[in-house]
Length: 118
Image 1: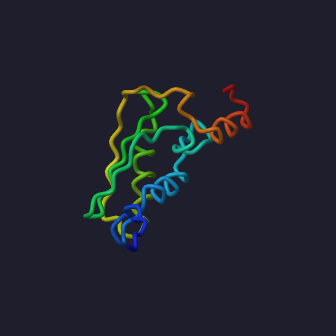
Image 2: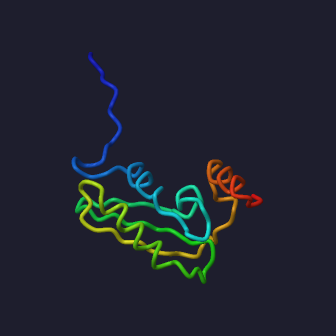
Image 3: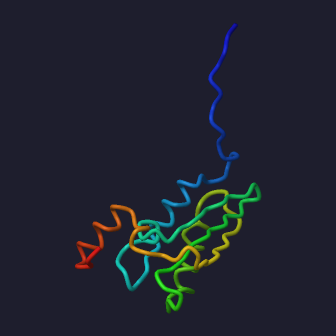
């Protein structure tokens, strides 16, 4: 009896993977903090629909962040350039609240390079 190891599920042909979306989001920076939104730990979830809609759930470093619209536009533009993406929706959430503990090690290193204490 010939048994084959099943292949892990992949994204439908023509759609970006979650990893590709996260990589595209690394060009989006908070203008007040010199680190991208992925390494800051601001991206909470990415869902890719078969229609090409990419839904991004993210937060900001503070509820009253004055650059919210700029970050949303930059994220929509960066992800919208990926093949197979028909629409990008960014939803800001405030729970759980952001904290420095959500940053990647690379993000913390970048912050220290710019003199921030993390």
